Length: 65
Image (cartoon, rainbow, N blue to C red; front, side, top):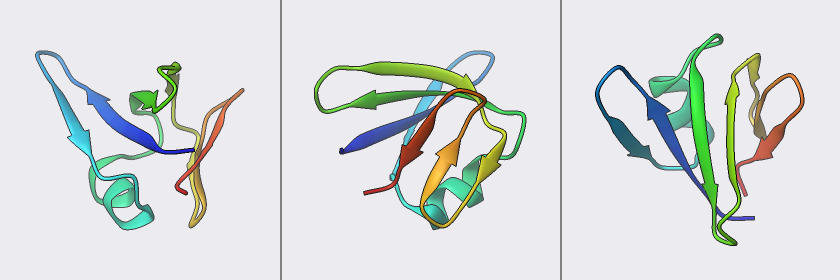
């Protein structure tokens, strides 16, 4: 699954490279993100954990590769 990670802020969204390093630099636990996949699926959730392999929400786990 290829994903684009978007950080939702008060006024804008930024596209972030879907890598563990980029995710850890731009996101933190408690942030709400919007994930757009190549098949046009959109997930919006609060981050509960960022691992070396994925970003984890309460009901979602989005792998980096």
